[in-house]
Image (cartoon, rainbow, N blue to C red):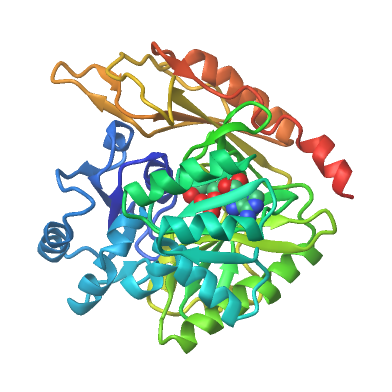
Length: 431
Ligand code: AMP
Ligand code: GLY
C-alpha cells in the first residue's frame, strides 16, 4: 500500500515506524510511506513532503496524484479543518473522523453536551461565554478550580487553579484570546488513556496507557502536550475495561451515530479513575495520543495498516470479538526530552547527538527536530525527542528508556526523571 501519514511529531514517527515493521500481508512487500511533513526521524522510513498539515488542498492534490491507498491523519488541526470530509468527497480512503466528529476535541462544550445526552460519566460543568459570567460561575465550585479554554490548545488550555485569584487570571487570559471557557468540577483519581479504534459502528480499545501531562516531577507545574507515558497500566483490570467499554465507548459511538456522524478514527478517552474504580471522562480526543502512541504501538502484534484500513473502510468486524493482539508480558516506557522552559518560552537550534546504534529494546522517535542546510540535526521545538524502552516489566522498560535518555544529548535538554516511577506503588493503593 501507498500510505500517507500527516503530521510531524513523535506520534507520526511512531506510526511510520510501526507501518514499516509489517509488510503487506498479501503482496508480502513493504508499504511505501510518505510523510507530510514528517520530521528527520521519518527520513529513513519514507519520503518527506513539503506540505503543511493545514494545507488540506495541497495534501488532496498529492494523494490524488500519487494514488495513495490510505491516508492517516495524526494531529487534530487538519481533522478540525475537515480534511477527512475533503478526502472522502474525492473517494480517497482516509483514517480519521470528519469535521463534525472532530468537534468532540475542538469544542469542549460540544463534547460535554454530547456526554450529558449519552449519560457518560464526566465532571459537572458550566459553559461561560463571557468573563463576568465565568467569574460569577466560580462561586458554584470549590477549589481547586478547573478552567478549560474551549478550543484546540495543544494540551495546554487547562488550568487547575488552587485559588480564586489564579482562576480569575486563567479566565481573563482565555477571553483575551477570544476563547470561551468551561469551568468544571475537580476530579480525583488516576488518569488513564484509552485509545479506541472506531469504524463508525464500533470502538475497539488498544492497550491502556498512562500519560504524564504536567511538566514537573510529582505531577506539578503547568500542563504540557505530554512528558512521558507507559503501557500497559497495571491497575486496568478486565472489569475496568469492560466498564469503560459499556459506560464510555459504546454510548459515545451511539451518540455520534444519533448525531449522524460516522466516526472512523481514534476515539481517545482521557479518563480519571476514581478511588472507587469508576471511570469519569476528562476529555475526548479524536486522534492518537502523543506520547501514548510511542508506547502502545511498539507493543501491538496485529498489523497496524490492516487495522486502520479496515476502520477507514467501516469494517472492524474481524477484530470485534477478539480485540487487538498485544505482546504478552511486555511493557513500554517513553520519556520525552524537551527544550528547557517548555511549555513556556524556550530556545532551540542546538545540535543533537544520538547513539549510532541503539541499545537493544530501545527506540527513538523524533518530534521537534530539524536538519540544518549542513545536515546537522538540531532541536526545533518544545518536545524534541522521545526515547522508548521495552522490557518484560515496567521497571526494566523504564531503565532502558532512561539509559537511552542519557545518551541523547543537546543543550537545554530537560526531562522528568519520574516517568512511570511510582507505578507499582500506585497500583497497590488502588487494589
Ligand atoms: P484536558 O485538556 O481536558 O485533557 O485536561 C488536561 C489535563 O488537566 C488532564 O489530563 C488532567 O490532568 C487535568 N484535568 C482536566 N480536567 C480535570 C478535572 N475535571 N479534574 C482534575 N483534573 C483535570
Ligand atoms: N497525550 C495527550 C494527548 O495526546 O493529547
